[in-house]
Image (cartoon, rainbow, N blue to C red):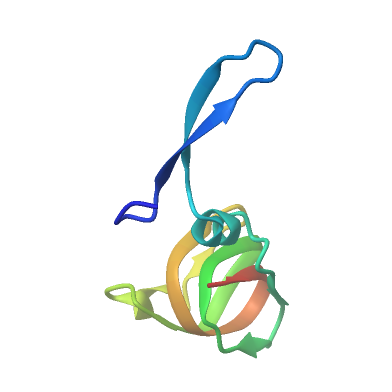
Length: 106
């Protein structure tokens, strides 16, 4: 793998005898971006400490607390976030006042 964690892989095609190449991304990041590291469903008055990498809003949600690496993250507190919105970052503490979210592990 290269410095950025990517590599090139040569594959032999057994049907044609030819070769093809492809960009290979290490499983870590791509695996986590797909949510396969798991997560937590948080509803009314529930909270959890992460770290989380993505918060998907399932029902309109108001957060009591959101802590993480976003500038001015406290702006999200006491603001209703509509269903369907996804928020990326590294979140260390998530507390839902009302609503329903899925918080995916980092």
